[in-house]
Image (cartoon, rainbow, N blue to C red; front, side):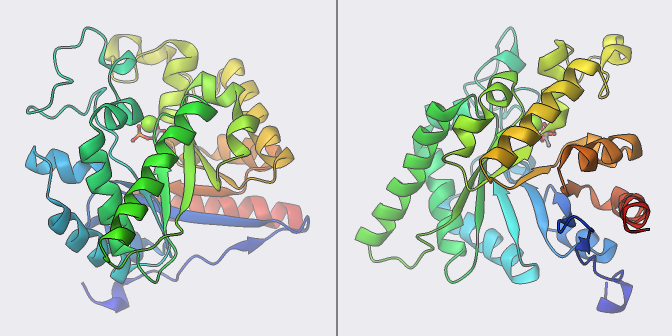
Length: 296
Ligand code: PEP
Ligand code: MG
């Protein structure tokens, strides 16, 4: 597709309280960046990098990853690289995490990355290499609290140190953030925010873990309530905790596509969202409406 197909880029909307409403796109694979740009997104708020591994059912080499991440960064500014979020319902046939009785409670996400540290380091090296001379953001999935966040961050520093020692050009100063999608990290949000450069709320998982409702189980789908009072209370706590620590927070889960939830988020002091490109124009319209109401 050519540039003419791209929607008017979404510029942050200034609110009377001095805050800006921001909307970015979620992407799963490199080619999604075109739909993201067509929808008007100026950045990627969540790059689900694990799809790169899932579509080939293996771990790409460092060189292969560098090429793909560079292509992405050349096509759009401002990318949040979520490190591979495998396990749960995203199982590699070749990986050791299969055959778990309870995969969503198991060797998943950051836990999986820390256990498979060599693969984690390769991905981090690739991101740092691709990000040389640019601003890059690295986001860890399923952080449980400050400790695992700091341990994972240390692996980023080790990867940067190794690249430095090897004389390989890289970005030595990425912003490093935590996904808040476990009740534990929601409750410890201030302790995490003290160390994190940014936070991203994964409501898809947060809802499942707060309510104990498997997000993939159709039999209990009616119990998966994104607006459950317990979920709302926890979201409010996250917003307030992040605000107290002055840590930027955004929402990248599906709740950010729900108009009622968008009202709730903005009322709670969350102004940054990232949604799938196909929801982008609807969400954009709702955000504009909310902003217009506040400006009137
Ligand atoms: C989430 O959990 O809300 C999220 C954005 O990540 P994923 O859907 O990939 O688990
Ligand atoms: Mg998640």
